[in-house]
Image (tube, rainbow, N blue to C red; front, top):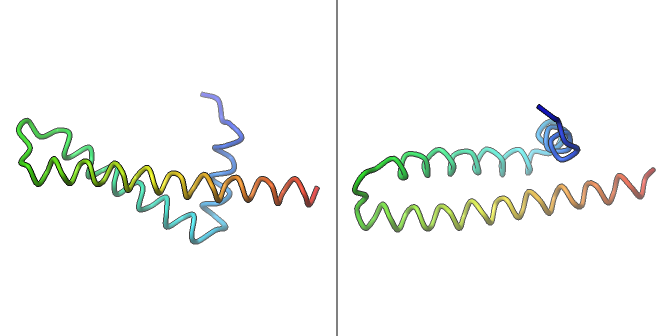
Amino acid sequence: MEITTADVLKEELMNRDPEFRELAREHTRYEQRLSELSALAYPSDEEQLEEITLKKKKLALKDQMYSIMTQHQKSESVSH
């Protein structure tokens, strides 16, 4: 399995950036709940709405994490 630069950067930010770490944890919680919801054979209307809402929130978190990663890469390239 190949380790990408993005993977290395994520790991570094997980260790050094509390905001990034919290976003990643929340992203994982949403992912776990979405797995639970997708396993339901007949989700209720509330569960379907929760699934849609969680997908949107998860995407927003991913965007925030990507933004932090991009800012970090820019600051690293400026300092080198």
